[in-house]
Length: 480
Ligand code: ATP
Ligand code: MN
Image (cartoon, rainbow, N blue to C red):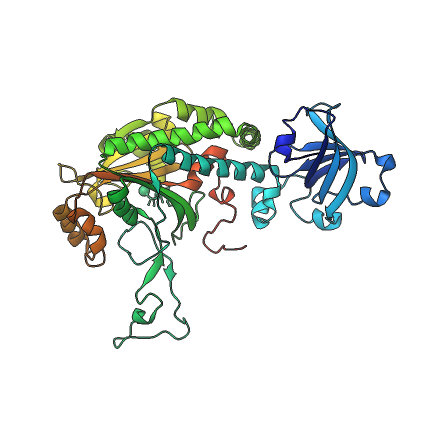
């Protein structure tokens, strides 16, 4: 008896063997053909039932959504569309699903909008679309570890609760065990955090970078891959309040090598899913093409999902300095005609996503790495260039996504870093441990952060970040 998951059985051509499968019914037609899915693949296995010799009681319970165990014989399929099927000899209903109840859910076999699926996020993983997305997500996560482990990086778990609030990466969620109805106060009327759990103010981390840097200074090359939190009140299709970030940090590494690694890394993981998620990508590609049909002709993308992934894997990312990018933008049609919401007036302007998308989608038509940004719009820890006005920062911009990576060479000179912190009013006492890395054996080092969900978004061709994480957290939404 072969007991296997459907993904394995579908590959099996040892016909006439006894097999056992368990899964959920996706459809049941003509009282004879069951399409069974167990989550291991986008493909269902067909189970053929000898209905004349099956009790009516059992047939009635083979409903969409029910979990069923079948034993039977593996045989070459008579019908088209599949190679193998199972001729059932034994049927065990494991868990019923009442058809009247199922009808009210997204399990009912008809088209449901993505919005509707979000409202039933606990069930949506049983649909073809979400099964495919979540399998691709899982394979991508594996490929992330695979890439770094093969290249001699070590996986580091940085803290999720932190006291450092100087990173400036985003708004933070506060962590406290104080009774909010009855807060302890200091003499001058402020909340007395010495009474709090950690005896100081703490938050959920917005980035593991600073701690990551300290570990790179011992292990040489590290990466983090964990949850990060931002209390940004921005309701966009690219922002979550809770997302997973991958943050490599490399000692003895300058910005050029940082960009090389980031590009190589992204290509590696995309190549990995092209090779290992073919069925799911084929399904997602079809889904996306249907979605595209609903759009006006000129908004449709010229490339299919897998063409887009291949394009990224096969072509060099275009590297452009901030200064060049500003020139391009100032001379662009939408800027001259004031079509941008934020018109670029001068060097030093912060780039909005409309500008990033113009560069990537209209001007270069390929992934772009922007580097050497004005110091004034970037974080305090970025390496100041010799021109004293730009820093060794880099952002990778992707079509349809905008920023997918943000990184930099870090300021390794203690005095320059301290001056910068003083100028920005960042407390050096709080970050004494961070400054120690510059006191003891400092070195040129670099790193970047890649938002995992933005990568999954690109990889699956979905358009809303809420659809690539099981339970999205966004402003006013923490259901499930
Ligand atoms: P953006 O400008 O898109 O808001 P950011 O500049 O705030 O991003 P960084 O602080 O550089 O982002 O974070 C590194 C990476 O984390 C980004 O390149 C992006 O891929 C991802 N990221 C940042 N904020 C979010 C978010 N709210 N939800 C999902 N991913 C995010
Ligand atoms: Mn950024």
